[in-house]
Length: 264
Image (tube, rainbow, N blue to C red; front, side):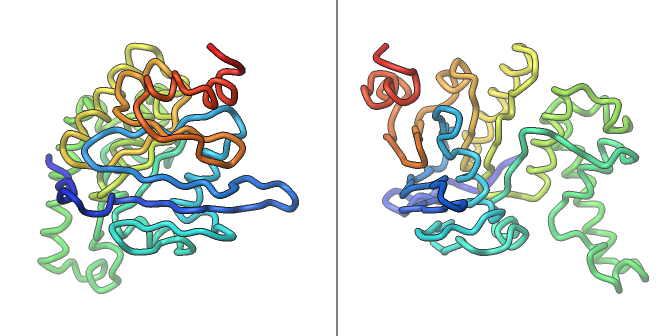
């Protein structure tokens, strides 16, 4: 299952955030942060607690509107747009705590998140047009392919409440893939899972990037970040400290002071 192709050489990166500022009362959660995310690689967004990473994710996905600055996705400004409109443009996110509909099976969860649902149109729902039936069949085929990709096929008929924490994380990835995204923001996809499954999740993210998907990940597991991220963005106190390779970040004095608590 291939994702969207990578941008042409010299083209603007799929995601560009510039001078993002957002305050809550007197607290500056984001204080001029900005960075670019390129396709075809996994980019890590890292920093100490309180750096502004989650707030930035919420701005990028439309859950929060910045006070200043801009976010461009595929060349179009999206800052201030509603989350569902941003998702329809191909920018989707996962959440650290994976939730679901308790009474639905894994297969039904995947189907619910399918793009361009025929059931969203009243006429198609009432009369079951041929086009609607074709789209349902296409979504079912995609759901089976996504499940196979994530090794969830044996669990298709299981209710989400029967899944382990790690399996729910995989389903969260699957639901994002069902939207036919151009880019996914992964919010701590390996948090709370065992090391073996964390390795598997990392492999999934690498393959998504290899397929041309643009991938940005917030994750506190630095071993995972080092293994899968060809590029990292380091934030602290609502600002961007640096962008570059993991080794470059690890050697940066400002990163050491802000993120590691002093010179390593």
